[in-house]
Image (tube, rainbow, N blue to C red; front, side, top):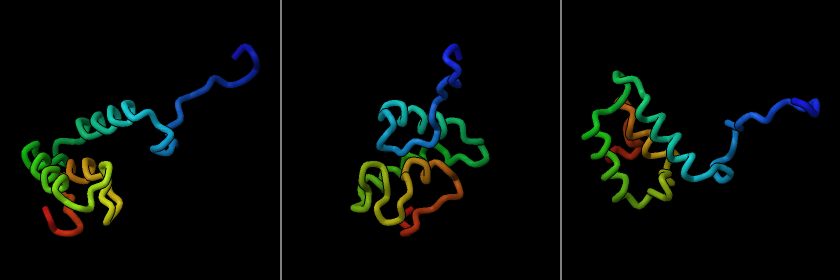
Length: 87
């Protein structure tokens, strides 16, 4: 703070298009890994959900174009469901 300005801090309110893709993916996977065990879907359920999403016409760059969710985040939470009842 030699020049009288506050030190820059990391921005956590960036738009996805402004984020480094690798950093974003790392943050996403850290979030999923850090979910409470009581909230997190079992790995085989998570993978099964993602397989269904990968075959869906609504999937576009990790986002469900029908409802707007990030499919990896929705699929990771035990209580979540596909809004189109595909899983």
